[in-house]
Length: 123
Image (cartoon, rainbow, N blue to C red; front, side, top):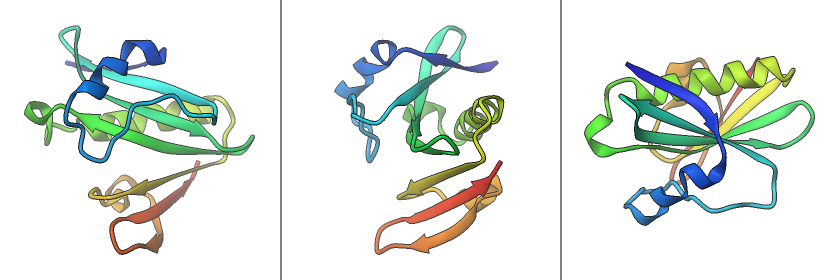
């Protein structure tokens, strides 16, 4: 069973040593909340929420280990971050994605770029 929970950055920073594709794992100036996906106590992915304002957050740095992709891990990480944002009274969540179509998670397409797109969802 896969679980997703909030963690300090120090618990996932070792993932920066791996080939993470577009996901980056470094501390930023914007306030951020990190989440880890685990299966049988083993880290299989991580993700972040950037706190953009009192009303808006951004999904960021979604990463799932290759052998665990296409098992619904990303969907579960998106759902858990949305729940976290709702509990904290945020009103809007967005994401700028390179490869994933977030419309399948209930997000609206805001803008398409040469590489990727910007999606948004009201909570």
